Length: 424
Image (cartoon, rainbow, N blue to C red):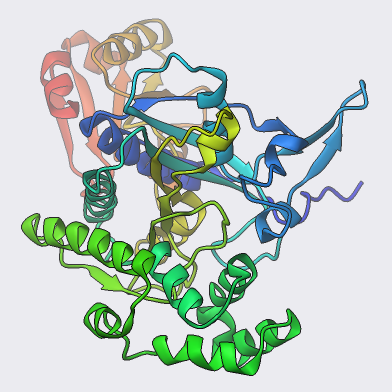
């Protein structure tokens, strides 16, 4: 049988999974330092939840890429394509949640879309959201989290930022009433260029006059100041004020890796205010490595009763983050073990020593096959284990162990207590 994985998914060997765990741990720790509590929602949702018009919406590229399935009861289901919709559904089902609700989610999502470097069909996202606050300080906190994670991972980055109210104001001033279709097209500007966006808009029925007025606001030279001078729409002006508040606080926090991008829309139809997208600046990975925004209407629509529940969130994409890090540093560590305990006809005593090391928080591999010293050293080296604890009868007679450093090749005859201290 010719074994293959499904298209767009892949196995992660230990060296990649170790790196992934390190990245997740960094992100989780950063979330917790900012007071965001963990939440877990199912990977399978009812299809009507994913397709809700106040969620992604039927026109969304994300919904078109949803993996659909049906259970034995004939119910239509789908694999979640993001976690924001699941969060909105959770809040709607739990009306007694204390606001603001600051939560984080880490887990897999699925999209039956195009495959390229940094984009697969099963991938992990790390989401952090604030529900129940209209304050722009929520955005400031989230951007601060993005910044902290990228700096901790030593990834040079740029965070693009915009506000949907500004875009809506521009579209309104251009005479465009079908905002959703225009935003979906405009969000592809980086991928297909102005010519491609104009063609897509013409195909959707927008007039040449509307398209021309739209692009009079949008160019490489567009700044927030230039828009402020020319935008008369009141909603657009409100978006400018919100963005100015965020930028002033980011300046106070000395976060300089910020770039205003008036064309930034992000594909989801539910964004109502701030939109954010982050990229690695010195990498072959062109996909965004994080993104998000404000969605003040989505959860209220799930809840019903004409309520508006403000919310904002950002999400890290683990697959592109991993690709960025793999391109920076070759993966050599293929095991979590810090030391290999190598018995030489001393298995009974050696397994007790291995257990004692583990109880002291040291990650230990135990040589399970009698290959001889040289073969076991080769085994340790191949996995990137930096230390080998050799335990022979002569060492035990002296109440010692032989600690070998696999990097330098040096060996030290030490008491177990001394060896533990060096390994810790």
